[in-house]
Amino acid sequence: MGIGANTLTNQYQGLIFKKIDSLGNQLTEKQIFHPLGKSFYANSSSNAFIKLDSTKALFTGQLEFGTDYSKSTLVKINLKTLDTLWMKTYSQPGDSTWLLCSTVLNDSSIISFGFRYYIVQPNVFFKPFMMKVDKNGNYKWHNWINPTFTNTQYLFQKAIKLSDNDFVVVGYKYSNICYPQSFVMRIDTMASKAYDVNFIGIPNSGLADCIALSDGSFLAGGSFASLVNCNANPDKYRKYVYRFNPLTGSKIASKFYNKESTGGNGILCLAQKLNGIIIAFGGTGATTPTNTINNKGDFLWLNSNLDSLRSVYIETPNVADQAVPNQAILTPDGGFAAVIASYPNASQQQYWLIKADSNGCYQSLCPTVGLNDVSLSGVENGIKIYPNPAKDLLYVENSHAERSRSVTSETRTSFSLTNALGQVIKEELLLELQQPIEINVKDLQEGIYFLQIKSEGKILVNKKFVIER
Picture 1 (cartoon, rainbow, N blue to C red):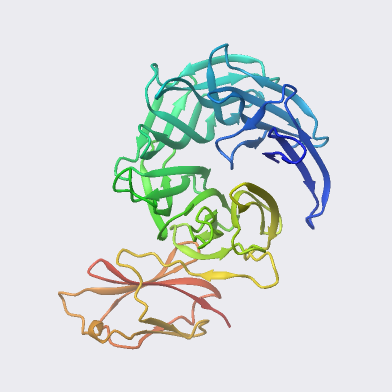
Picture 2: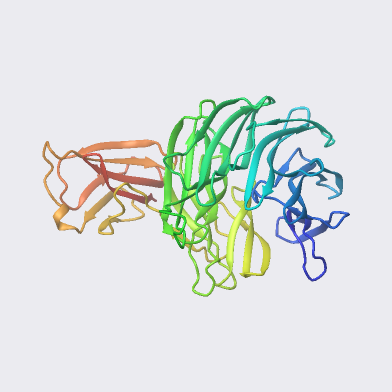
């Protein structure tokens, strides 16, 4: 399901539905256009559609009635027949409103989050709200989250229901045109906030998705840009995840991935597999010399400690195309299917679907990037781990001679081994940091592991290896 139009046959953006079998063959296609010829839009590409139950889905967005005039819109769809069950707009005359994300309650009624705005050139003023409609789309009530109009625009990206009266909402907001700021909010149906965590220490960030993890914590993902001022050009981004307690909003852990780069270097959607592995779908920020709007997409594997296990690039038929996954679902075989947004040029958009196996491979030659090492001090290329895969013994060799030294009481150095789920399974103090270091792994089961070496609390090595027998 998506939003778009074939500009050769229709100038308006409609809702597009396709049924695909397990081999990727299209079974059915249907396009729904507004009877007045208005275009559908959604701010949150990865959460514009939510599944209400096994047979129905909901679109959350807005209809464009003019350059600066939009009406908030909900559309309910029958997933079996692809028929529209109802289509409703909710703005009063003169209002301009957006709906950004929704969640469904136990009685099939719907809570949506959005904002109202008005324009007095050259300024725009916003007032965020939450709204309830019944299962047939009939308006019930709305509550203002901020009581007055301000210049702060709340872009709600994902709402997760804790109960019918209690929600966690994540996204980002703009208080000026330059600097977005992520937020995590817990709010009830009276618009009373239990917490509103603003990432003041990371001012140039945006959260695009949030999921509940198997341990009860929540994980949000997005991007971070180290802007110095409004004139920074081009902006540079890194992938970013934030794990938190949904009841208190308190931070449990956060991590950045990838080096800073221009383009869409960020996470758009998240999923957790049954074995605990987290998959983050998004862009790598790699740009082409011919078109700087294009960036490569990838899938990033994380364990429960948020360590990056590996990532897989999405290859495109044309190397100049952008190919970023903005929607994904897990499949019963342990793999996933992802919708790819491709931009062959600045004026053309294409969408395609890929099906990947449990290793993230979707073609005969799997384009594996490898471990995306992250440490406080960076990655020393001179560190060598062998053999990899290992069987009984693992050796670590440091080619930087100046780092080979005896460990004294002033320099405490240790190593730890963790499995793919982030569980520490072996930890020892090193008496010396000569080379090679020999580690006995014969008692460990086959699988993926991480070796981390610390000295005085500073990470020297954070490497992945495999045990295979």
